[in-house]
Image 1 (cartoon, one colour):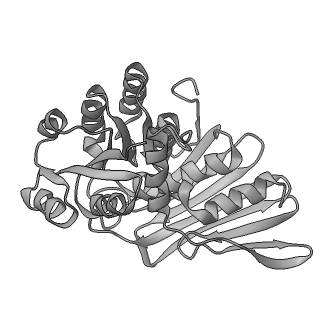
Image 2 (cartoon, helix red, strand yellow; image 1 turned 30 degrees about the vertical axis):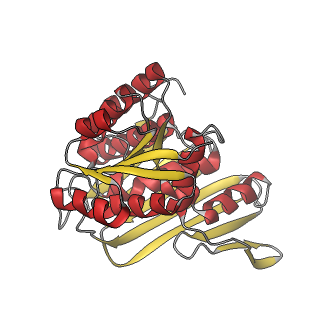
Length: 319
């Protein structure tokens, strides 16, 4: 089959990583790049050979592309993705999928009408360490999952300007908690606030998945160093993972040991998977409904923090 023809919309910090990866994938052809900043569009053209545009609709009208990835600011995701979907192009939109639950539902409905693949860039699902932890748990390696503890902290990244830590950081762990358990949480309780930033810069979130398990998520832009860790405690042991080093350690009554993990770049795995989905070689590991649930739970966590009470969760769409 011919290579999948790709366009990248948004050529800032994260969009440049998309450009780089697509230029390296033998299964993809990087055709075009769009950014409202002419300098960024020119950068994509000069460095990667993608035709640069400053207008999305012009690009969609002129270029023959099969799929588009969207790396624009979060508040623009819904508007940009709708244009791409209505143009009949498969789409991967970076997280958070949209600014609101209502926008996410609209994208899903439109993609289903147009028979378009809609994926969301929850990159941690493609982290080899996450894949190894998920498989180990599914094989009964720690018995029944009882507790999930997530810590995602660092200093504020200057690139973030339109969301707080819940939708930028904690949303990863909201999604991974759903992925590991294979369930939707039934209740959320959160404490959050802001010290140095326009939006919340620290949050602690508790997700209840029925009687058990329970997930505890800590996220902030206050810690002077970067931590990305996950611990899952079960009835027969525990497994700990570092998202950055991709190291996985298991501990139980027999002692402690490391699981073998082949280190790979999660973004390259994610975008390669997207190309395979568009080409019909794979079923999507993550879809629009997963992106919707992450946004919905994040919104309800923020609402819980604002009222100081737990909130019962009900999926906003039939999953």
